[in-house]
Image (cartoon, rainbow, N blue to C red; front, side):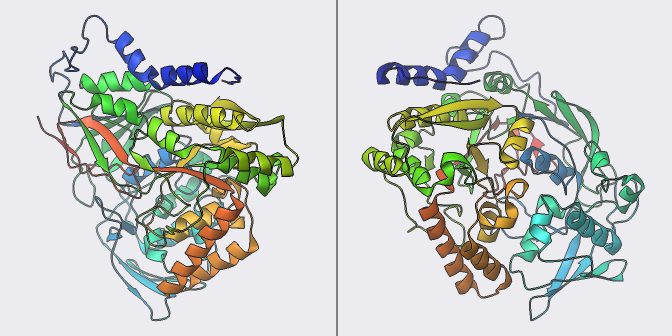
Length: 543
């Protein structure tokens, strides 16, 4: 849907207020009559929907595909974290890698050789053992597929990096030292795939096959997938590790946040994806009987990539003008309701390498107009911002941005897309602006900055600004290969300073992580760097 407006301020903000409250209004309309919640918000239904063996999880975005090495979608990651295993993993709220398929490892003094000892009882879903050869196959395939996973591994390892010492021992020799290497192995891209996939390689290394199939060793197996409706996971009865606590996990795709909220309050679902419901509606849910709002600090970043390769946004003065046009305080207060803080760059507060002194752009309309005039856009500049559907925070943010930019003579048209279409748009460079969120899969600034800023990451590698700066490339490459933490920190600080000047991205907010769930859900913890990791295999339900 496209929004264009030049209404007076009063009516514009009245409309914004109505839209922000839409989730609440829809809920009130839908819940009138039989089965409605009481005026105090207490569900009229009892716990008749409780089933200790079944976990119902609601999200609003379907899954593009299930290939661990080919997908860039967080919705995919949620499923493959449960259906595959990795050499290491992240547990609970920890940002330190823990053993999984690798029970131990040793690192050479020069930081290039990693020797992993695998557990000997792990099996793929077809019963075949997880061996050192499977590890070699998986990482080699990731490199050869050349998509998302290759962004981490291609400059670090190649087909000659592996030495299978025995069935359960493998040595990986890096082309050059890579400080966060072990941490990267706990990402979705580090999932170990059954080499039997070779039988279904076809012309695309099995990408087509894995788009709808799973060939992992994880605690859950894919049972069924009705696109746009429900994906069902069943506990792996022969899982080599600790037995999954939930027998069945239903990931249900519910596009309306108000519907998901009602279903949670009635006990028809157990948890809602923490990205689905706005802070305002979450606040309204507080105090509802049987519902809890789990809150934690997180590394999520909400940001706007600006396409630096085309049109007016290729001019740094235009990008700086836009940065000066945004009333950040009003945005944080009205959209996030104080449940977020402004962030200076791509490294979130709390992570190693965070630069608290990087330049922040003041809300300065006069400066914005001056920069636009210098760039030859004194009036009449028209841009488009792309957002994915069914996300209240992004739609409300876009409306406020539209209002702010109108004050400096920039018309911002809002275009809403289904998630797969949106993802294709921004990764192929067909956008002006995008509005997206990012959570790192491993706790090192290399992860965020490499994807946001290295020239090799343009587009499908997540550099959605199509940004290129040779100085930044050099600093990133040095940071990757050094084991000197002080040098690495200095490099990452400088990168944030350079990016602040050139403004390929506008960093909107670092929000609190908030997840609405039934009070009978036990054992769920929000991981600060990866809220997409939902450990269904460790969650229990207790009335």
